[in-house]
Image (cartoon, rainbow, N blue to C red; front, side, top):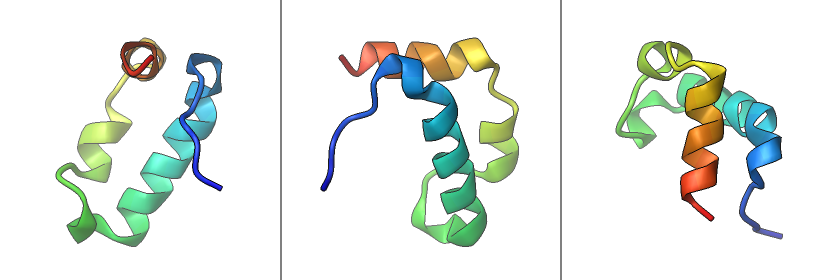
Length: 51
């Protein structure tokens, strides 16, 4: 099943995103280093904008 993340699930999304970037870095337009530098508020804001 595929579904969107809710803003309150930002920490789950962050973990999955960083794991995916670590496992397959060439599949994304970003890097683990760049994404790891985001604040918790940045992750929350990103998911809030998707709603």
